Structure formats: structure tokens, C-alpha cells
Image (cartoon, rainbow, N blue to C red; front, side, top):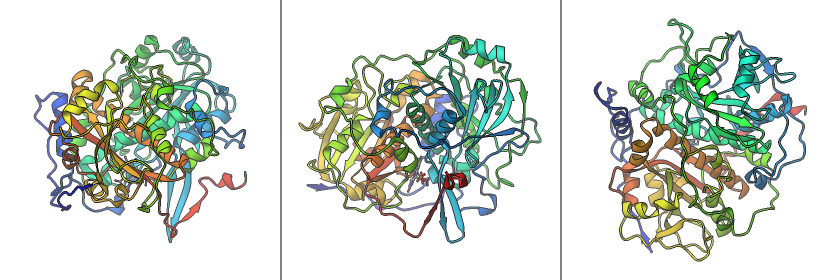
Length: 577
Ligand SMILES: Cc1cc2nc3c(=O)[nH]c(=O)nc-3n(C[C@H](O)[C@H](O)[C@H](O)COP(=O)(O)O)c2cc1C
């Protein structure tokens, strides 16, 4: 068995902030320059403050003083949905729209799940994970009139600390019903924005990437929350960023505003039935004129910003989306569900709620827990879209996978440790083989389900290697397996333009979120890894072309709990339930 070795990690002075390219550069050139500039190298990390300026630490909870607050109830525990049923959309009875169902939707998607305490310090955790626990993601919704929420259609901001909705605008009922006429009754909109500053405060230039990962995680938690309620959710990918800004009232009220800007990210449609696209809705939204009277002003999150990161604004600008025709791609050559899961999974003690609210990142891995092949194959099969487009959460996005996995397998019962690859788009297998090291074996193991495009590349102990390329983090070598998410980068930018740079991170975040929940199902833990050395990861897999780039890392394994921390309930009203 080979043992891989790479040079030891060393840190150097951060790069100096500056312009990405000149004014004539295309948006794609700006993206490529940003991506190159924000790579971590063995000898130099991407530019960041290098210390934590506690006096300007951003508030993780934005509020809109002046907007009415609608408290969401925490529903009484009802019939617990088994975890595996999340993955059988269409078979779960749709909940009617009500205060309780909307409350549960946000509870599962974006709410607090615990407070942690260590000595005098307390911090909260949420259903959606976040790089550095900084939570740049803000959630919004446009709801029809719902008893005890509002007697007119309205735009709301979700306030996670209170588990409440802030009513930001009341809409004209006639305009709203015309807009929603093509959709099944009970449809509504949900959206996400990012406050870049929250991540940039700690991580500097690389923060834009982390914000986008967090959007991907949140898109998955929204889709999964909808699935738990028997609802569908689709990304409205043809919507312009201007429209999203208009719908959620994200633009600053005036120039004197000190509140940090929110970057529009995405808009999704939630419906009780199978969502249909409506060009009318897309176009109306593109005009950004559905809002009527706006209430409340966003709070300022930091008293001052002592350092700015202009390249984040540049890449944000280069990746803004204008209104476009929705993406349609052909999935007919993807595997059927039966080819991915040879034995259907219809048992298990874990409830969906326990997996969703109990999800946590491992802060350390035990270096000993082994998982079964079945659990490993099942977790990877959950990452595959199916031919019928029915696999959750992949039914929420219209593009074929652009994120493939380069795996470091350490401890999976019966599988040789070593490097593996999962070609999430089976049609990309040949190009991936060409892009990676020529000596790789590309062996489909006999025990692997026939439709799962998982291949053994090379046997060997890669624990030290996995940790080294993940910024020396032991969690990448101490789990059962870890992985790098290899993006079909240049082809995606060529096909869909610079704005799709964001989508690549979103897809990577969604992959991460599915694995987070699968780890819970296995009774172990996992952790997203945003800190990795980009080019050394490419070297491991023999990738020399810029066409393919690593976009995110992830590890799954037996955790070591930090027993010094006290865990407190997320909401005080939970205690009296
Ligand atoms: C995009 C992203 C990148 C992350 N990168 C790292 C990392 O490099 N190392 C690490 O230990 N944890 C990492 N994490 C885990 C976060 O620290 C964790 O999600 C956060 O502290 C909240 O804790 P929770 O996931 O238990 O809710 C990352 C999480 C995300 C979503």
C-alpha cells in the first residue's frame, strides 16, 4: 500500500488587496482572477485580516425595527416522519398552509437548534451550518394571506433568534393572485441573501466563496424542510438579481444608511404540488414591482469596518444575474433509483426532525470509527439525481451535476483505503478520466450498486494526505472518509456565464448538506471544510488543467465531543412545551 506525502504546511504574508482586473475585463475573467487570487497555497493563504477584531464583530442577527413581528409557534410534536421518507417526495401528504406549517418550515430550514456555552461565552447553532458559524445568510419569504400570520399577501424577513417573521411589505392582493394564478393553491416564495461582511470580517477575500457555500447549504435545508411538509421546492433560476432585490426590498433606503448591504442570491418557489415554471411570474418579478408599502429599516451589524475587501464587491458584481430563460437539461441517461439503491431503504429509527435539528459539525474525529459499505454507498447514492428527476434535493435545481467527488477513503468496512472518484454525471466519466492521473485504475467495485458511478482510483493510506491538503486539519484524516468536490469549472462558466460561479458553490453546499444528514443517520458526524489548499488537492488527483477546480471539502466520521461545552435549548419556549 502506498502512503502519499506532500510538503508540510507553511504560512506566509497575505496578498495585498487590490483590483481584480481592469475595466475591460469580462465577468468570466474577473471570476477566474478572483478564484486564482483566493486560493490557499502551502506557502501563502488568501488575503485575510489575520486576526479577529472583536470590537467590530458583526451581529449574526439582523432585524428590521419598524416592521411588525409575527411570532411563529413551535408545533407540538406530531406523527414523527421517519428520516428516510424525506427521500420519497410525492408520497408525503402535503400540509395545508398555516401558521404551524410555515413555522415548521422555517424551523427545519433556518432556525436556531441550540445555544452553546463555555464559561462566559454563549453562541447559537442553526439548522443550516455556516463557515466559521458567522451566518451571512438571511432568509425572506412572500406569503399569501394566512390566518394568524397576515390577512393580506406580504413580504417577510425571517428572524432566527426569535423564530418570527418581520412583515416588511404588504402586497396588493389582486396583483399577488394574478402572479400566482398558474401555481397550485398554497404556493409561496422563499429567498436568500448574503451579508458578505459577516464572513469577510474573519476570512477576508476568500469570504465570497464561503457565503456561496452557505447559500447552497441553506438551499438544501429549505428543500429538505419543504419535503418534510410534503411540499415541492424549485429554484427560479431565470430571475434577475435586480428582481430579487426588488421583491425582498434589499436595496438601502438612502445613502446615509450604515446597514451592511445584502447581496441578492436566489429565489425559490414552494408549492404543495409539482411546481411549474411560469414565465409570467418570472417577468413580473423581473420588474421588481410587486412590493407596495415597505416597513422597517435594516439594523447595522458592526459599529465600523476597519478593513474593506474590494475584490469581494468586484466578484459579486461580475456574478450578478440578469433575467434569462430557465435552464433545461436532459437527465435521461442518469441512473434510476433502483440502480442506485439496490435494496430500498424503508426502515430506521431516526426521525427527520431529529436528523435536521440534531445535525452538528464534528470539531474532532476519533480516528477509529469504521462505517459499513452499505452506509457509504447509500450516502453517495443520495448525492445522485435520478432519471425521473424525483430525487430530493436535486429536484430543486435544473442543471446536471457540475460537482464530482474525489474521495479519500480511510475506514469503510470491506473497502480498500485509498483514493476514489464519484462521477455525479455519468456522461462526464470519460472527461474526468482524461483530466485525472493516467495511472488511476477506475475500477467499479463488485459490491457497489450498478448505477452508482463510484470508482477506486488507487489503493493507499491517504489519512495524512487528506489532512495536509485540508489546511492540516486532522478532521479530514481522522474520519471514515473525506472528499474534495471537483467542479467542472471552465465548462460551466462557458456554458452559463460568470453568474454560474455562484451555482457551483451552491451545488457543493447542497452536497455537503445531504452528507451532514446522512452522517446523522449513520449515528456519526461530519464537517464542511472550506479551508483547503486548492492546487495541492488538484495535484493529488493528477489534475493539471484549470478546467477542473476543487470547490469544497468535507469529512464524515466518528466524532469526539467537546465535553467542556454546555448545551442549552434553542428557544426558551421549547422548555415549556
Ligand atoms: C462552508 C463551510 C466551511 C466550513 N469550513 C470548516 C473548516 O474548514 N474547518 C472546520 O473545522 N469547520 C468548518 N466548517 C464547520 C463550521 O465551523 C460549522 O458549520 C459552524 O461552526 C456551525 O456549527 P454547526 O455546523 O454544528 O451548526 C465549515 C462549515 C461550512 C458550512
